[in-house]
Image (cartoon, rainbow, N blue to C red; front, side, top):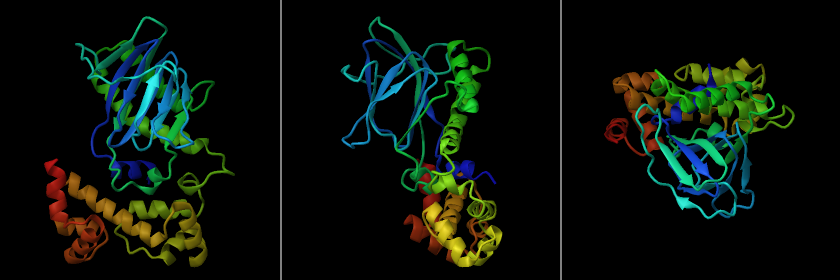
Length: 311
């Protein structure tokens, strides 16, 4: 069971949106907060990302070709050739025939920078703990042979955007869609084993990872702390302590969370009857399921399905 893909899939509520940005120094672009997660890929040239807000750990970040930035909560920020350049508000992109994405052009006649900018639609109202534990800003470099798969995705994107050909309109969105997994995989694998914490450690932990995989693969199974501990090869108490320390909540709390997440996804994406949704979420009766769902989401399953489909 690919827990990373499952966790992200449970939060994603739409296709990513993106735009090609061309800047010539001096240039500065202010990007408003988005409902989801933001990202930038530097395809050519250099620039700075300046986070907005007064948090002391949010400092300007120098970006070079091949760099990728992921903003977990879609924080507002500025992109510019220099942190001191006054920014302009972002304008609607221009769409040219044959181009797979719209473009934004800004600046004067100085050195050129080209970026892919966009955001992923993620349900931040109920974030998966894996995403919640990520740093607010992830900065990854693909130079000097680092993160080869992410580097390949960036190079493919750059090639398709620089020279659009037959099929680019389908290839580019698919690459952008996959980019999120490449970013998070690269960040998780970048954590030194001796320093990894939280989900970065849980996904490779010899006891916790098998238990997580079992819950994700079959959330409807009658799991108990004892049965999950058996999968992990630990005593009940030792497993519960280890699971809670890495995942951030006790095993049964996470099981309930994942069951409700599974149910919500089924309600959004399928026409399965409520009895089927209840059974696939680990509930023996529609009544018990509806009660648990309303406690978690604040409304009955049928009302939730109607509301999310009306958006």
